[in-house]
Amino acid sequence: MPSFLFRLMRVVAVLLFAAGVALWLFVSREKPQKKEMVNTPPKVLCVPAVSGNADMIVEAFGTVMPRNSVKLAMEIAGRIDYVHPDFREGASIHKDEIFLRIDQRTLLLNERNARVLVDQARADIRLLEQEISNLKADAGLAPSRMALKKSALASEQAALATASLMLEKSEIKSGFYGFVMAKQVEVGEYVNPGQVLGVMYEKDALDVDIRVPLEELQWLGSVFENGVRPQVIITIANLEGDRSPVWPGHVVRIKAAIDEKTRTMPMTVEIGSLDVKDPLLLLRPGVFVKCRVKGEQKENVFKIPRTLMRSPNTLYLAKANHLVIKTVKVIRRFEEDVYITEGLTPGDLIIESRLPGNFRRYGNHG
Image 1: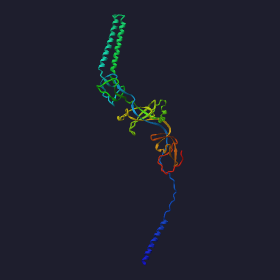
Image 2: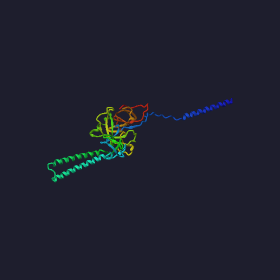
Image 3: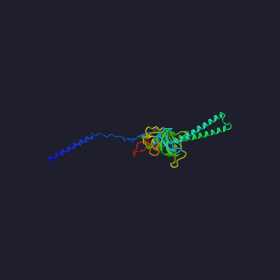
């Protein structure tokens, strides 16, 4: 019995101690502070709208071609006995250099014989003039004899001119400083008149034929006024980024008819300076290039990235911590940019960030 009372008293003491500790914790607790709920809008990244002048660029592609190319051919028949050492594909030849010649031996003999006959005819005329001056010739026959001598001299001079011309035609000289595109003859070959022996084109004289879609012509309309030739920036089409050199150029003419197959307007671009040190990046006939034609300049235009557009003509603006859905007038979409003329004012904050799906939209359509 005493042991039972002792255990009971220990249990009661523990319970009383626990109750005292609980009471102390309850009394000494900190009272919670009341906080008001604040509606904090989500943070977003914004891009300020900036207006300015924008050039309407029209992009087209084309293949480089020589402005002046010549098919080489002899005007007379003969056997080739000389070919210029640099007359080979890709090599350059300076102006007035002889790069093809046929055997001239027969032609030289013909010219020499013609010169002899001319000299003989002149000697006959001088002799007759001497006879006339010495009164040895019959006065009645002298005029007719002199006419015959002069006629013979004229005939021999014509024969000499023909022989000299044939000798001149026996060789081909370069009419300009250029590059050889093709070679189709070797020393010893017999060639006929008109037979193509090679092709050569003038250095630093290259063009590009481009075709501009009809819907893009609206950006070039006023540029051609008063004889102005639109400027063009030319790069190699298959070189990405800044790897390609840049060449200046300008549109020199518009073709007379629209291409029926592609429904595009053909134009010819004349390439300017071709000074590039790397021989592998020289512009040559056949290179596929990209041409950026500078068109009209639009004033007070907002040029923004396409990624900012929420729909074809809608932007999200941030105003006073509210979202405003703004309808704008887009005049053009080109590459990665959009050109806007109405619906924005300078300084408007265009929302760039993605918005959460449960984000509440404020404001009205503008």
